[in-house]
Length: 288
Image 1 (cartoon, rainbow, N blue to C red):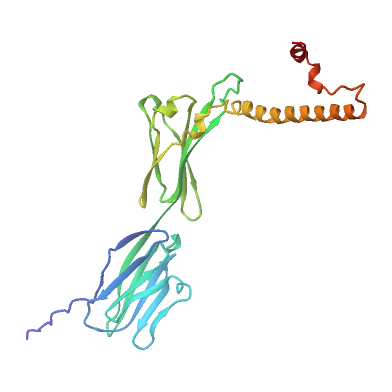
Image 2 (cartoon, rainbow, N blue to C red):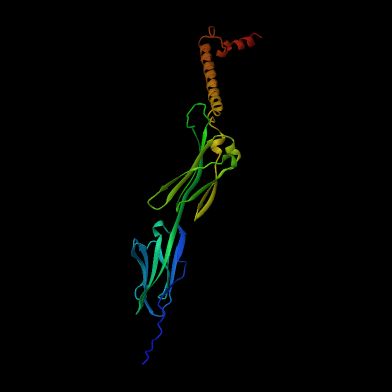
């Protein structure tokens, strides 16, 4: 006799409603959404995060118990949608620790659990800056030319890319340094030195920082270079004049008061001429 074989029913599955891999900048928000496409009864929906090879429970939803969020996640995780056939959670103020893969698990009866999986990449960028400063020439000779150090830096995850836009007469290869931190961020510093000259002020020099969450072009500041290495000498003249003039006035005033007092005490021996009358050029004026 021929044995009839019933066609196998399609396997239960879960449809991930968002992209399988999402990217978000640190501090932003992200939502994960899943939908069960099985005809079986769903008893409970559970959200988990894969952590060091294990699964960490984030939240659950069931008709009997409603929404439940684990204490470790309650401060920045909420349900965006909660039904037995469809579920979504949102992460608020994402940090670098939120990076990883997540699971939505639909516990069905009688087939058991069906799972959807999605991952999150978190980007971070901070402190993009460019600066210049005058430094001494390596030979440290008194008559040696001043050097200008230009530095461009940023901290991010992944490591930011730094490129310089230089005029053709300044083409050179900058030095680049990388410092890695325990939170997976990397500080990149790119710098070079050049002889201090007007070229640095006449031609625009820019630093471009490229990152998945930020592309910015920074213009090298030249304010600190316009004064030049001898800028400290220029203010000396107005400062000296500003100090000497009041001192001269006070000296003449005290001299006048002193002679006035002497004249009042003994008019015959102390004529009422102020002290500067004794100066040669004033004697000539008196005689004329």
